[in-house]
Length: 348
Image 1 (cartoon, rainbow, N blue to C red):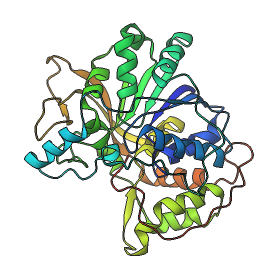
Image 2: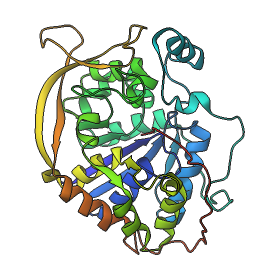
Image 3: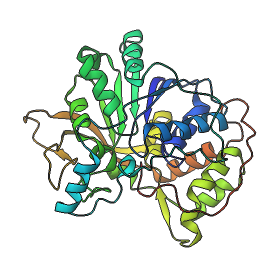
Image 4: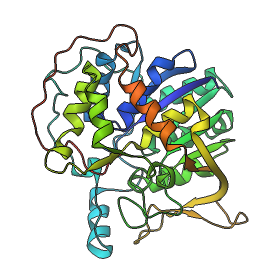
C-alpha cells in the first residue's frame, strides 16, 4: 500500500506518537508524509510541538513541515474534567489539562532550530485535501480537534479524504482514562463525534482492543536501547524510569501499532466493521465509543481492528527503532540518561 498521509499528533517526549513517526520515516517510498499537524492532548500544542521538532532533528527529518493546531478541545475543559472526576470517579490522565504553564526544552536542554510553519494546521489540512482529492490518508493519533475544525469549516472536503486511520476508543475492553473512555476520544468527544458523522468514505480504528495486546516489557525495551543511537537514547530518557524501581513494568505502544499497519497490513489478524457512536452527553460515560444499532442516528460503520500478530509487531517495532539511519543522516546530538520521573503516565 502507498499512502500520502497527514500525520496528526498530540506528541509527548517519545513513546507512541513520536515512535510511530520514527517507524514510518524509513518507509518514505511507501509512506509519503505531507505534513505533521499538532493538537492538544498529551501536552499543550506548544510543548508537544517542541518534542516533535526535536524528534525531526534527531531523525534527520527536518524537511517535514509541522503545523500548529487546536490548543483546546471543542467543549471539554479542565473544569469539566474536574467536575466529572468529582461526580463519577477517577480520571487517570488528563494530559494538557494538567499542563504546567512553562514551556520546557526537549531532551538535551535545547530547543530545535527548525520551527513550525506559519500556516495553521486546520488550513493546512484544508489546502492539502483540496490539492490531493481522494488521495490523502489522515492518520489521527491524538484528539480529533484539528480534523473536526477543518470539516466544520469545509464539510465538502470530508468526502475527498481517502481514509481516516485513528488511534482511539474502545469497544470490548475498559477505558484507560475513565472506566468507559480511552484518552484520545475522552479529551475531545465532540470532535470525534463530528468527524465520525462526516462523509469520510472509509474509517479505520485502532482502539484499546488491539493496542492492549502488545505491552512493551523490559526485555524488548533493553534490546532496543542497547543499539545506542540518538533515537534510542531519546527512548531511554523517556521510558527507562518506569523500569528502575519496577522491573516487571511495561508500557503500551498504542500509536506504533497504527504505524506498523500502514507499513504492513498483515499484522492485523481480525477486523470487524461495526456501527459506532461517541458519547457526548456529560456523565460517567462521557467520551466512550459505543457499538450501537446500524439504524441509529449519527452512526458510522468503522473497521475496528481487533486482532494482532503480536510477534510480527514486536519484530517490526524493534527493527525500525534500532535503525542507525532513520531518515538520511541522523543528527549527532549528544544525549545522556539520568534517572528522573517519567514524562507521562497513561498517554497516547
